[in-house]
Length: 380
Image 1 (cartoon, rainbow, N blue to C red):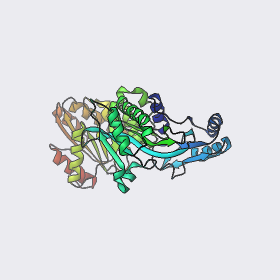
Image 2 (image 1 turned 30 degrees about the horizontal axis):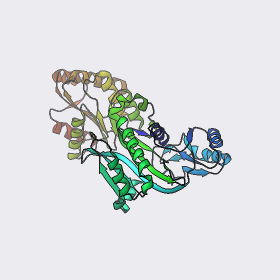
Image 3 (image 1 turned 180 degrees about the vertical axis):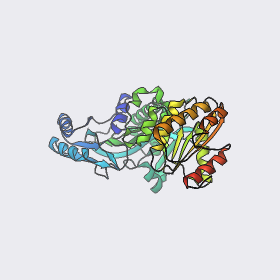
Image 4 (image 1 turned 90 degrees about the vertical axis):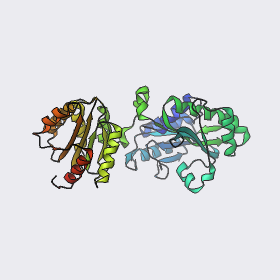
């Protein structure tokens, strides 16, 4: 789950990371009022969960409240990469001497979090990695030890940070690590972290990604979710506790278990098919959950066939079959459906589906081939 800049910076501030004065506004009038309170020049920043806001015209510097209102009116009417701008952040303008990149993310290859820092801040770190990778300093973190003073000094020296800023840099880095840890983040990033004319460090921008699997520990973060960038089907799936990701193929998949779902998608590709989604109904899914999953799959007009691959352990196959029949009665699907039921009450489940014009299969390979043929309009 992505957090907006203003949400990330509010969290940073609670941990002692200095940020500019400012507030978020939903209307141009609010933006003007905030600009009046701040006095002087302000920055109007669109709050959308995509990069490239500045290039798209979503960030403007206003010299007075009237100009702030005019820019906010303009930005709030924009769409950036297909996402509507519903809010703007009005921050005091900063006098910048240097821009630094500082972030913490997961390194799956090393199975550890990694600090990344660069003296080339203010641009996307991916661009720095492509054009000048030597400017990026990396250091892996042992979670049992955390970040010590010598780690911060090594990073600061690595990016040629002037020594007078090392103490504050160390405090900010430790705070960012605490933010990352406490919120089950997969990314906590400051870009840019600036050295201002006042010789102080300040986080001008902030970005956080939260591990969805940990959101049950953070209900306050769940409430911050912006669904504008999510496909409507993914939003609907979350209501039922389904793990669903929309893809671009034409074979809908309903599977119980993430590993089995990945295997099902792989074998569809092996036989020339193209999955339309990843959908894990999870263990113990009842008829209502299965019915909801089927409706979500069928809401995609690209779907030409559906593959059900259910291993009945905790999830009973007869409950899955019942959900399929309920969904068929409600949705009245016009696409062929291939079902592979194996495990607890599989015989009962197959018997329930026998009269519903379903294509059945004993093995995953057989089911995948039948689904691919069905999507192509070939009779199995």
